Amino acid sequence: MKNTHHLKRFKLTLEYDGTRYSGWQKQDDAKTIQGALLSAGAEIFSGPVDIQGSGRTDAGVHAMRYVAHLEASTTLAPLTIRIKFNDLLPADIAILDVEPCALRFHARHDCVARSYLYQISKRKTAFGKKYVWWVRDKLDIRAMAEAAQLFTGMHDFISFAEKQELKKSTRVLLHAVHIHEEDDLIIVRIIGSHFLWKMVRRMIGVLVEVGRHALNTQQVEALLKEHSNKPAPLTAPPSGLFFERAIYDEAELRKFLAEIAEQP
Image (cartoon, rainbow, N blue to C red; front, side):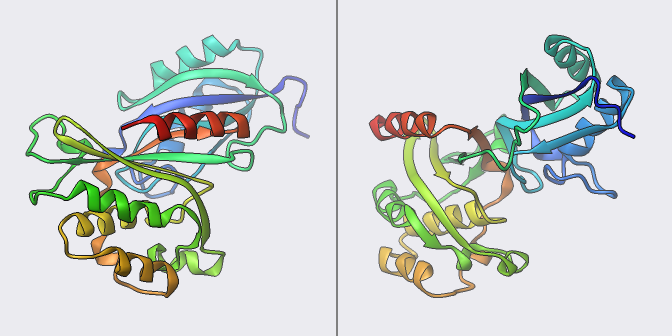
C-alpha cells in the first residue's frame, strides 16, 4: 500500500530550451522534458514520483514559465527541492519556483488559459537562431494584425489540427492574438483556453502568408469555416515558439488580457 503519510503536492514553475527535446511528454525512446524531471525526481525522492504538466509542447518548442505539479512522499522544504532538481537537471532546464499546493491541484485540469509567444526575426541572427524563425520577406504587420483578429473567440480549428486530434473536439476559445514589433523581431502572442497539436505553429504560418500578401483575410476566414488542409504545409518551425505562461485564475486572466490590450 502506498505510504501517504508524507504525500505532498508541489506546483513547479520551470523554463526550458526545447531544442534538444522531443517535447514535454515522456516517451520511452526519446529525450523529453517530463522524462528528465522524472529521472531527477527518482534520485531526489525515495518513493514513487508523479509529475504532470499544464499541457504538451511539441519537439523543439521552448518554455518561459511552464507549470507542472509534483507529487511525492517527502519532508523536504520547497527551496531544498528546487536546489536539488537544479543540481541534477541538464543546463537547458531550470526550475524557477517550487510552491506547496493542495493535493487536489492539477497543473493541466485546473489551468484556465495558456499563453504562447512566437518570435519571427526580420534579419539573420547569429545568436538567436534557435529561438526565432527568420523570414526573409518583408512582412505587412498591419495585414497580419487584421487577420489575427479573425482567430479570436470560439472557433473550430479543425483546419489547423493534426489528424490525431480529430477524434476529439477541435473547438478552441482564443482570448487574444496580439502582434507587435520589437527591434528586429515580430512577436505574436496567442492566449487561449487550450491548443491543438501544431495549431499555434499553423496559425503563425498562415499569418506570415498574410504578411507576404499570399493570403488575404477572406481566405483566412474560410479556413475557420470549412475543413482545409492548406495550413499544414505552412506550419512554422518550432524554434520560434515559447510556452509563455499558464493561468489558473479568471481574475489573473482578465488582468493579463487588459495588459496585452494596452500594448501598442
